[in-house]
Image 1 (tube, rainbow, N blue to C red):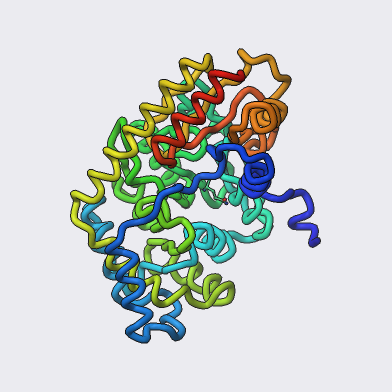
Image 2: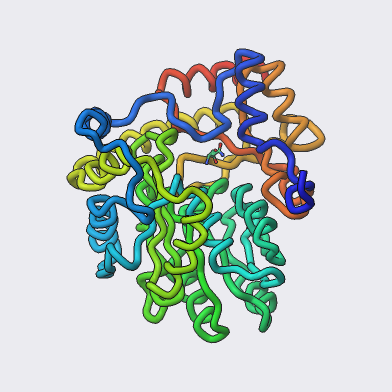
Length: 380
Ligand code: GLN
């Protein structure tokens, strides 16, 4: 394997989902719903296939989807952006992230991450040859230590890569935090790469796109996808929204990574994004009910559960159960209890920072969540 990937192992999500199958455990690890996406979106995909929308799409997205993305963005942020020169459709947000790093970051550029961070960030930054600098968000509220961020920014800082609502903690960046980040970026001419795939799973506060703050659009890449919002994580449709001068770099990388994304699925994604607001309200209501079941269950079991404002994840402290670290706890949980969670130490540059914390997801039907809680009550 090439040096740029030498240090990385099989992703934790793959490892844990394989163990779930092997041990017949209930999978509250990898974040994918165990229920299906909406019928009208599936119908739109079938229709597009039957209609012969099956050859290469335009590289940066079928016009219909680019427009649906900008219409949704306008509704969410008030920003008017051009579907032709400011939107790039990618194969999931993971590709948007990779294309953004490879298209905009030079070897040796410094990029600041907030730990715990989604695992692909570190790997794609390594592929881009970036130098990673990291700030740790700490429980109970995982708030941003602004002074630390300030002291980490140097003349070599090219970008801050952020994620709100935040995987794995469920933290949402507050208006004050975003204001502080924005003014540091403007002052120091730094880009913001913002992964907002959980924006529609914002329960305790309103989601704010940092691109919508004064002076920020011109230096921000906003990335999102279809998977979480429409419970279609296997479709791998994502996009990056950025001003034309940044979009150019992203598109150059995208052109030579995947060239284009699945054509019929893009048409279906366009139909999905035009869903009425009631779709989003219902999604949120369903997830709040699921979250309540899991959070109460985990508390009853005896975990310290940290507050999660968004995403379909919650972080708990497992130390009341006496295991030496998160990996040992998760192994025990799979083998002896029959439930899968994600150890968080892989989401830090210093694994010790995550040794007390594990992540559970509640993107499962209520019956599954209840069964997992019963197993933990019986056997932990
Ligand atoms: N984003 C999902 C999670 O955090 C999983 C994605 C993956 O398996 N790579 O659980």
